[in-house]
Image 1 (cartoon, rainbow, N blue to C red):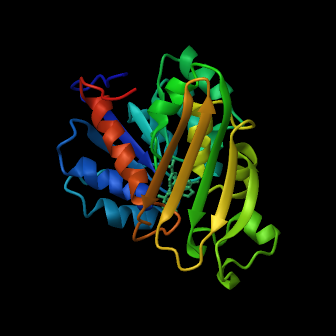
Image 2 (image 1 turned 30 degrees about the vertical axis):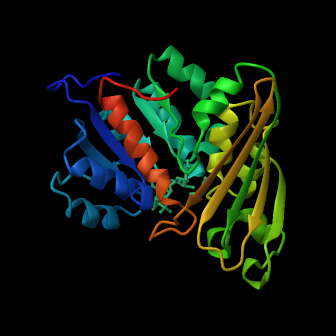
Length: 275
Ligand SMILES: NC(=O)C1=CN([C@@H]2O[C@H](COP(=O)(O)OP(=O)(O)OC[C@H]3O[C@@H](n4cnc5c(N)ncnc54)[C@H](O)[C@@H]3O)[C@@H](O)[C@H]2O)C=CC1
Ligand SMILES: O=C([O-])CC(=O)C(=O)O
């Protein structure tokens, strides 16, 4: 952890003031995580100003480069496309980075090396998925397969580039339907705002080309569900999560931001649970 020089308080800047960014800002504003919310930045500065004004801390809304300069940790909660700017700028400045748009990491293994050279940390929370501790352990040995099956209601998949390109009308489906099957890398390109969980799974496990994903549209569904199966020399592991879609973004399950908040608590504290 690279502490700021002013007062030894770990300064956090949040980029992206949508569902996840706001939830993290509100958690920090409650004051029970010992870090300082130093700045926020979003594509829509006016909306970010209005939200920041509702917080006790009244964090300034800054340009990205100013936010990076004012933070020890930058939390990316924007988009995979935005990450392409945020990640190198943050790491080159020697600042820690937490990434939510995890799919944006898959084509940039050099960022992990950059973090290493710059002596800073690159954090990837489990997000909307469970069981990455076990996956990491399992992948220390021989692995035969890692598969994730994602089930979302139509509104959780609507507008994804793959859905648009293929002309799939997710609202016209009448029963659970497989709409995509492939690697985590391919899925994160076709569904950049829907299956970042598959990127986190692949990075914790055997990589984005070897990790398989199936995406199912579930008409009438009320949960974003992810089933992970890992088979290897250790045996077989499965995990299942039924995520309540967040109120403001049906693609994003509530565990996504709760996981980031829990990770921040551990970064700020002395004790870490789990692997
Ligand atoms: N790792 C995980 O398990 C999960 C990751 N995600 C991903 O996390 C990211 C944030 O998710 P949400 O908060 O639900 O999305 P959201 O759409 O509610 O909010 C995104 C915010 O980022 C802002 N933004 C967009 N482009 C920007 C840019 N270039 N610079 C600054 N701000 C920009 C938007 O104006 C918006 O305020 C998304 O990429 C999403 O796909 C979402 C759920 C789970
Ligand atoms: O919240 C979820 O179910 C997962 C999600 O959107 C993502 O991984 O991008």
